[in-house]
Amino acid sequence: QVEKTKGKATMEKVQKSARAMSRLKRAVENAKKELSTAHSVQLEVDSLLEDYDFSNKLERSVFENLNKELFQRCLDTVSSVLTDASVTPKDVTDIVLVGGSTRVPYLQTKLYEMFDGRLELCKSVHPDEAVAIGAAVQAHILSTGGQGGGQALDSDESTTDLLLLDVTPLSLGIELEGKVMSTLIKRNTPIPCRKTRTYSTVEDWQTSIDVVVYEGERAHVDANNQLGSFVINGIQRARAGEPKVDVTFALDANGILNVSARDQVTAAEANATIKAEKGRLTEDEIDRMVEDAEKYRMQDAQLNKKTAYKTALEEALFTAQSKAESAGDIKELEELMDWMDLDSDMASLDDMKSRGRIIEDKYGIMVAP
Image (cartoon, rainbow, N blue to C red; front, side, top):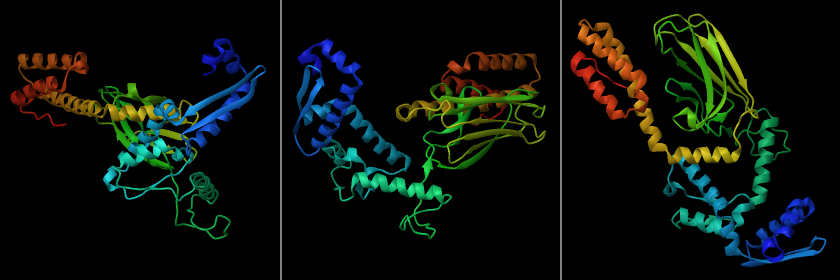
């Protein structure tokens, strides 16, 4: 609007002036609040610049159109909560509006439509006070060593009937062969938490393993965020699949992730510590990653099936090689192994299954993921 009425030069002056931008933001914030009850509002900022008084009429419809993307993100959050809780809109019995943005009529209308208009929105709770009270309860929980709340916060008695939990915003895991993500701590797991899984080697006589840590929701690590890595040396020297290495993720209340790996036989150990502020994603990036995971859910499920079948096919090939006697069989199996090493990543699941049928029909070894 400034550019339309006063030209580009004046607009650039406003953008470069911290004082002008601060005053303009305050005026816009007040206008947003007024538009919750009015259909239009007059924005006025006297002496925005030395020779410029800003004045502009803002209609609610224009405000809603300008912020449509932000409003959609709020609705996407509601959808994500329902998905994470494994419930449908029909399972919900009450909708309580909490937070200043819930005063916006557009959001209220869309939320009402999301639940097919069968539920009235509960507006009896003060949206701002609810946020403040929730923060106070959480502070009390932290100050009492993680116990609950529910009574007066200034009470000397320990309270246990209410508990607010921090959760992990994204799943945490490590990279496996084929750049597959193996999740140890799932998204929305309450923290602090500790999870352990056992892994093994993919090559004969392997004595070290790279442990690469990721956060994200995608099946392929290339679409996730790498947090760190370390190497564990001195693991049991044996054939592929025989060594047992326990990988443990311990996430504390401050968001600090401790990752350790320990060989069950040799007791060799290695670890890494990943702090909450180091290499972690912003809130916007987390939202985008969750949206992408939902968008590519079917594609990721197909990748998981392909990876599981590939692992089973490799095991069947190793078994067939140990039983092969004729030169023809040995050559055929070597060609299949070469195909697995060079071309399987680009192959479809059907291509893999066609080769799996050769192992099943000719050598009698079932390929079962």
